[in-house]
Length: 99
Image 1: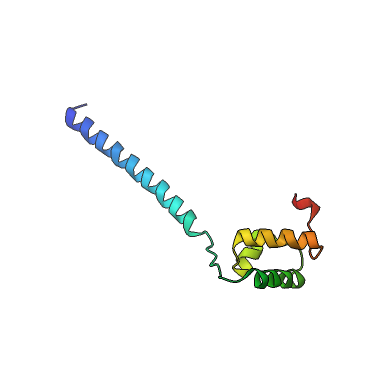
Image 2: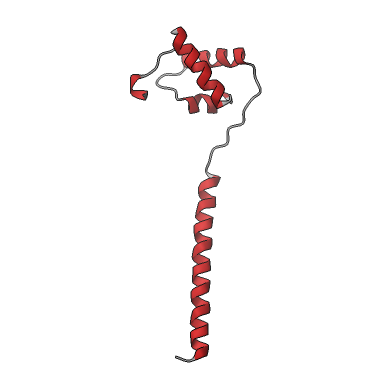
């Protein structure tokens, strides 16, 4: 093989490697574009608690913290704190299978 052919083959392999890396980056970007963005509302704790209680009253089945956050647009940490408070008060139940 001549030196020119070796350089040509090397350049082709380099281009293939770069295309492969770009394809991987595009796949990652496509996955990221599928992520759901939840816009949070700036509401007080009592209003959030009231809305969470109402949501539990109108929803059949289980609700996860992330479901509540997505449906109501409430800060995740606030959702967890309020749900724990509601569990302690006996207003909502905790599914034993969720642990």
